Image (cartoon, rainbow, N blue to C red; front, side, top):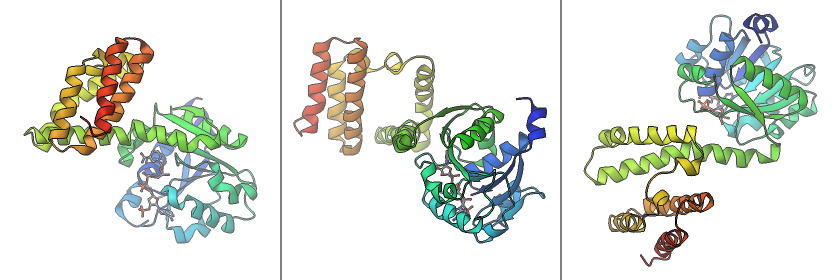
Amino acid sequence: MSRQAIVKKKLTVSIIGAGRLGGALALALTERGYSVEALVSRHPNQARARRLASNRVLALSPHQLATLPPSKLILIATPDDVIGEVAATLATLMKRSSRGRTVMHTSGVLSSEALSPLAVLGFHTGSIHPLVSVSESIEGAAGLAGAYYCLEGDAAALRIARALVRDLSGHSFTIAAEHKALYHAAAVMASGHLTALVDTANELLTHCGLDQASAGRVLWPLIASAVKNLATADAAQALTGPFARGDLATVSRHLKALAANGQTEALELYRLLGQRSLRMMEEKGGVDPIRTRRIRKALSSLAKGRS
Ligand SMILES: NC(=O)c1ccc[n+]([C@@H]2O[C@H](COP(=O)([O-])OP(=O)(O)OC[C@H]3O[C@@H](n4cnc5c(N)ncnc54)[C@H](OP(=O)(O)O)[C@@H]3O)[C@@H](O)[C@H]2O)c1
């Protein structure tokens, strides 16, 4: 859709939850010609809300939801735990104003079911989850372009969501409501858990004498090259290291070193992810099956406390 068409359409939007993602959406949607009418946050007068809300945008607190403008689209970008509460409040306040209006939340784990009090009133409901990590609104707004968005909801909400994603230069896909928790577990594995894994590696390097900052610095090119390989090949092809080579002696040394240094948590992570790497190599057929079996035995002996 041309920029002219977007501006002409000027869908009006209110965003409840002007935090990291809500703020990024407010900035990106405004930039793409949407008319952001209101931003709701618990501290509307604080600097962040003031900076994001231009003079034309109302900055409201959750207690002022009764004064929310009649925007065609309401995006709820609050913490997951309060989405149900916000939906119930909106349903109480907007009993007779659902016609042609859509409410969507941005949670990865919850489905549009969380908005059922509004669906009952005739609002179109859905969820729109960008598969991207937004730690700050201004940079986050730029990061929304090119991201993949998981959509779910009723047909009319999906139409609005797809158009919105297109306008943000993103890509959309849909899943069934019952798969949202599993979908979000996958997202956490690929993002938050990846970060936790890198943190574990950092900590191991500090036991080798590096300070925190150096540990992060020396690992970064390795991490970047692994991510780059993942972007261009399937996971089994991208895998390097002792599991890809079937290096039993190397894996055994790692296991012993982790145990000897009291790294119980890292050992458990190493063991679990090692099992996964072995499975990938088995499926790819790239490693001698006898070696694979021996490595698996070494990993599971450790699990039974026999390493
Ligand atoms: N950040 C990401 O990378 C990301 C990515 C994809 C999806 N999401 C989803 O987006 C949603 C928000 O995440 P976030 O990271 O942006 O969280 P966040 O930065 O903590 O922002 C949450 C916002 O909600 C406001 N808020 C809290 N309780 C409220 C209430 N009862 N009524 C109205 N507003 C309330 C907070 O107010 P204060 O400003 O006063 O604290 C804050 O502005 C979550 O559903 C999350 O799963 C986030």
